[in-house]
Length: 193
Length: 285
Image 1 (cartoon, one colour):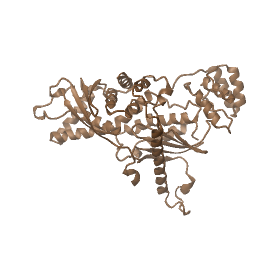
Image 2 (cartoon, one colour):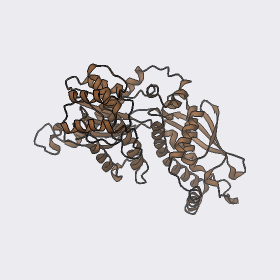
Image 3 (cartoon, helix red, strand yellow):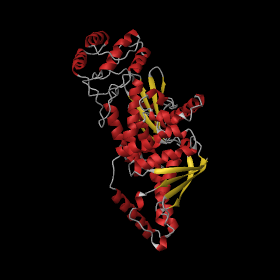
Image 4 (cartoon, chains in turn yellow, brown):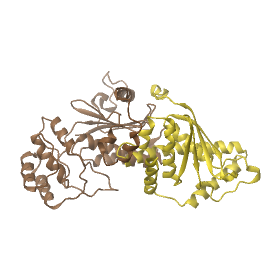
């Protein structure tokens, strides 16, 4: 949709930016560190996902705030939230553009799932997966980020990379699947307090 | 007129941040346990916060259920792209803005991520401003009449910082009850100002002086935005918007020390920034 990508573009230009290579190398160093600390591939992936989740819950706030400022009170998120889950794909594309500068495509698979396709992944520009780690999903952080962002919008989703350029595919693809819509309401903390 | 307090709640009702600017009389002076009624000030405050959250939450549910459900799916993209029409965008904003009593108002600013900012403030008229910084001439002429008509007892016309020629003219003509678009005749402006302003002569002088010299319409992109609207509502809301967009996001959300699951806003410099920002508002006092 034109509006989502234009929002993403505008926000991207307004963001202060970091050198992409520095970013990719830092991420790579971090993954390397994780490999040394937790030997097992699935633990590493879990850790990356957890990190991504905590990044995502912060990113969504910033994205919603900035896009609201763009449109004087009606953010892309506000307009989309009240409607279908699949509209969050637009929101994700805009935010991926805003934070990473990547242009993504989305394909709606059903009412409760869609895929996001990235032609280039800024995290993997220098990366090759070694033979013994061919199971590792290097960009799991992105999946965690998506999960965190959608969780703050009350959607409990699973997100996994279905295609990855590091594993030989042409594009990178994430599949986002809605598990359930979380209910709003005062949680137990409200009563405890 | 003073700001009483600021509360920030998350989606679940947990208080993320709270600050009292003046001592409430019921809390017994903050620690004075001699009266039987104020057994435990902290508990009372916690109760109060829960009540505030509960009220805001319930009102939001009510507003959502009362509002029309047919927000047309197709026009969503239209309203996003027509960013020059404020009114159209506000149609999708069904959240509660404010709760007003005779003496005080509770302003509520909700974000899509469930964050709620509640600013409790005594009702006020914007005082005639000190020598004005450059401001935008925002489209607040309509709201100027609303506020002046709703505060019938007080005949002071709320004026914007004097650089906004257009709004002050509309404020002057609001005496007659009609909101008009900008007329930039300085002679009529000055007579109306002299008639209507109860401010000190120095302020009138400065306003009149500035009308002849300035048509400053420059925005202040990076500087803290002084409230440009004459209406209290919009200026407070703009302030809350700034607190969220710039202060909260920058200080808290981006802070590596902040943990959303167990909020420790105290470890960021949010409180200091918020206090200094609010003190800078002309309506703070």
